Amino acid sequence: MKNNNLKKYGALIVSSALLLGTLTACGSKDSGSGSGSSDGDTIKIGLNLELSGAVASYGSGISKGAELAIKEINDAGGIDGKKIEAVKIDNKSENSEATSAALKLATQEKVVAQIGSATSGNTVAAVQVADQNKMPLISPSGTSQTVTVNDDGAVNEYAFRTCFIDPFQGKIAADFASNDLKAKNVAIFADSSSDYAKGLAEAFKKQIEANGSKVVAEESYVAKDTDFKSTLTRLKSKNPDFIYVPGYYEEVGLIVKQARSIGIDAPMMGGDGWDSPKIVELAGAKSLDNTFFTNHYSAEDPDEKIQKFVKAFKEANDDKSPDAFNALGYDSVYWLKDAIERAGSTKGEDIQKALADTKDLSLVTGKISVDEEHNTIKSATVLEFKDGKQVFKTKVEP
Image (cartoon, rainbow, N blue to C red; front, side, top):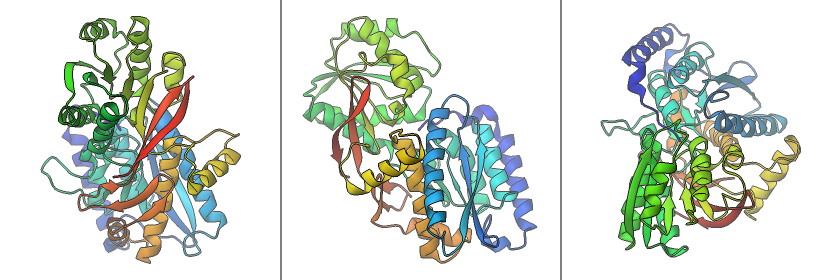
């Protein structure tokens, strides 16, 4: 998910946070154990999520999935007999707040690990704090490569993700456009303010051209834009038979609605940033017909493990069908549980090693393995909107 520009917050925030984290860790009872450990009959984990602000739909969804997993695990006896205690902090969809939340979780709450954030930018804002305090961090949906690998190409040792990465879903979208929709002349309309969107656009363009299709137009917008008609008119003049729109539901919903209003009826497609019920409110159900997006799972997938999760989630949430963020939050907790059990420890270093060694772990959103850059190797799903509802189209293995 979204990777906002951290520079605007200045290095001072992160530097101060890291200094405080270092001082606090040095004064802890067991400085060799990472940020935290089990306390009595509980294991504390942190939820650093977007519960308000621009992308609250994502963070709230992850929270509901994580809470269901925690309840199930606790009802079944916990982890090695110890119950999970969740410490939830709202990062308000802001990088600086995500940094502060990570610092509080590591140095004050002494959690054994952090789940979150939802967006790549907010996750990256917390990564240095996690590494400094040896607090394993699992982003359920931070798809940007910057989550696990820094600008110098070094792996962020304590950072992991439950989702696949952007180059993978960009490639899948291009192959779907070429093979399933037979697209020959494509346009790209991407959010230039987001590393997430730019990464998807780059991967899509590389693959679609390799498939023999032609990119006839490339345009951009920035987050918070609301009027896209002039740019869409330019795209229409190029007569594309497919438009790739990597971005987030806040803008994408308006883009789709305005595209249809000026007579663009070509299929449109994006990434997992489209996955929010808000997109239907913004675009309208009819406008979303003939649009597609790559995602982490589908509630319509007949897989037995998925349907068991769907049933449990509906029972706990007034018959609401779980979306991908619900599933990723759920899976993140179960992955952490698996790592703690394999490690036989709640020390940060031990959990980190177990997470890095994960291989063929079966979860709701797919069977996952972790590569040397802490990327999660797993399947992806293509969904189609029909009458405002997400319909399972196909599943693609890595």
